[in-house]
Amino acid sequence: MNRFNGSSPVIPHIEFSDTELHTWFERDRQHVELRSKLNEETICEWWDDDVSQALEDGFLNPRDLHGSAYQYAQDMGLLRSVA
Image (cartoon, rainbow, N blue to C red; front, side, top):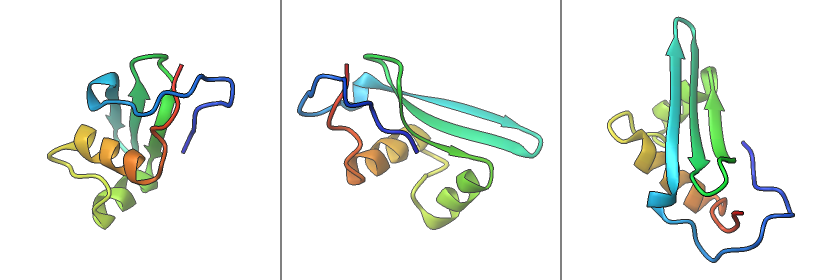
C-alpha cells in the first residue's frame, strides 16, 4: 500500500469525487488501485492474492470496489494529504 510523499501540501480531506479506481484482471493476475485525480498518485492498492483476501475479509466490496476502497483508505488515514 502506498502513501503520498511528504512533499505534498496538506489538504484536510480528499473527497470521493477526487479519486478514481483502476482495476486490472487477467488470468491469475489481479490489481485494484485507488488513485487521486488531483495528482494521479496511488492512495492504496492491492495485487493478486491481496485482492482476493481483501474481498474475502470484506475490505473490498465486489459490487462497489471504488466506494469500498475509498472507505478503506479513509479508515486507514490515507486521505489526509494530496498535491
